[in-house]
Length: 296
Image (cartoon, rainbow, N blue to C red; front, side, top):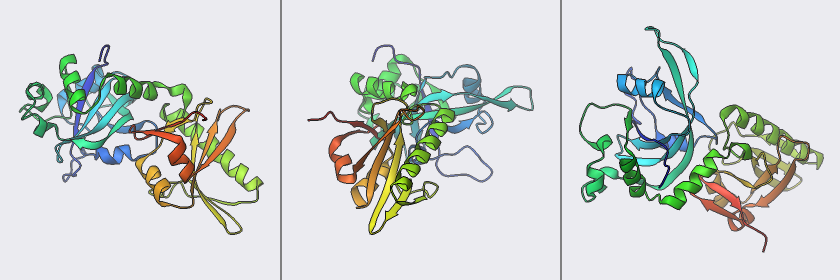
């Protein structure tokens, strides 16, 4: 794991305490729509050291190990996407928002505290030693390698995951929040127009969370539940959530529509049934990353 960016451990409690905004469920973070999302900031973190880290030390591209305190497990890995200034605090300091983008959601949460009992290297990681509780913890390069390897990330898998997260120009959820929103809007409008031109009655349903698809389409007796993905380039590679994958496995009407070159005049649409999607795409646990396999 050479040239590893700084790794920070971000500890959250998913149980909201009365009058305490410092909570968050990492599993819910990974189930959000693709792209960067706000995840706290100096206005919601009370620990002085953690606020100082966000204001002065955290940088775009830094890695975050997502630790769920009340469940005693690591849920995944994300990357710092943006650190926009959103105002000024009462004492005149910058209020900084923290925007994170998912890289890897672990297939099974990693119980690092249990592993620490048999892994001497883990027992020396300062973020998991006793002390004053806070949200953000620094790690040394050696500690970072120990933590990532304990979570099952070797050099190759980490490098590929980081390339995916950094590929902003390719779209598919890899960019910043603003560009992703623009791409999502253009993609869905194009798919809806394409289906309507073919005689389908189209109903957008992507605001209804948990369905695992974006559009419901009907023509005669035919029904399609369409999951829409847009990418800025020509490669059919994108983030796809666990709920969307589960829908492809359970919903007989589910299908995938991928629009490539979304923001250009040469955009095209390709479609796959659920069975074709599960057969043709390689699913990596990068919350998930789906990459179209080459033709045989």
